[in-house]
Image (cartoon, rainbow, N blue to C red; front, side, top):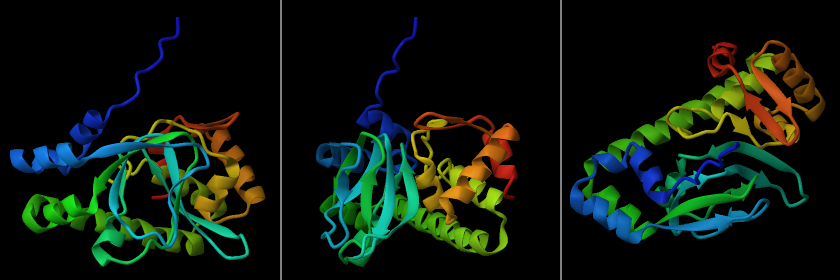
Length: 230
């Protein structure tokens, strides 16, 4: 008999988050008092380009994409945001309108920490500042790697890197091996055409690194996928 796995809770997200356990008791309680969650339907927007930033976000469940769309409808996906990911700190620290959309690729639940609480942690909790510095550094390193990959790696390696990125141990610590993403989305993440991406996915499947399924992909050998691009 198939037993349905219980949905993760907000408390479980905090327990698994590197920054929360380092806070003192008073700071933890303030976070618990101020944090709330929101449901984002598939295809719905958590936030839009041009919005005034009012929250720091944590993905409790689901999968979202970080994307920029031009006025003529063309879009570029900058990255995926899976369970366990905390994001949006750069815009809060800069104090400027958001420059990208966050769209749910599947029904998702997201934690919202008010900017006032974020700013208080930033000002009073040194451990939180250390986390933010590491977070921003890891994200910058990943984007620099994407730039390099686009110019130096072959198509298979670019696609493998995009998939492995959804399992980044710091940025996306709670990813499910089954990714409910379309091949078009993976192509966007990889920076290659859909046709080249589809061919690369089939070759990676032949190598035993993943399984292409209806409505998504399951990574069967994450370490092998990572080794493919190291």
